[in-house]
Image (cartoon, rainbow, N blue to C red; front, side):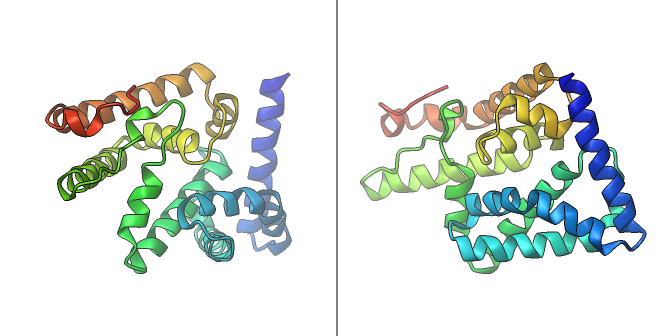
Length: 208
């Protein structure tokens, strides 16, 4: 029953997308109404300001509409829209020369991704080491395979449950868990040398 509901939701989106591709503006408006609040929520994770998040969301929908022909309909429409929104938010931060804020957003800690719980440090040396660790985590996350990066981002930055991610990505929950586990494992491998060389910095912090 749940699988039927998931398929039905995806099929409805695809019907609206196909209508929008043929020039039906109202069809795309329905997609905007359906996902507007969630897209604003995604933008908020990055920009931390409601008005700016609304602007990012609006720009993301505009980009999505203009790029509809590039949507190959192989994945869920929301997954595709999520990627556009996150990239738009990141570009906004970069354009405003707020790279530090971008990095802090990317390394938000969560109950399951404790490697993102980076202590700030009090001395200049500790602060520098913490920033280096954030840089490495951000780089490792950005270099993950797309399917793994998307699963990790949906879980850690948007706070979706495994069931919700399964619906968005249209794949079994077991696959979602496997992708997130693999993503955390890859990031851990990348940052382990830096963590091992800075034991005092991370002492007392949460670890995986």
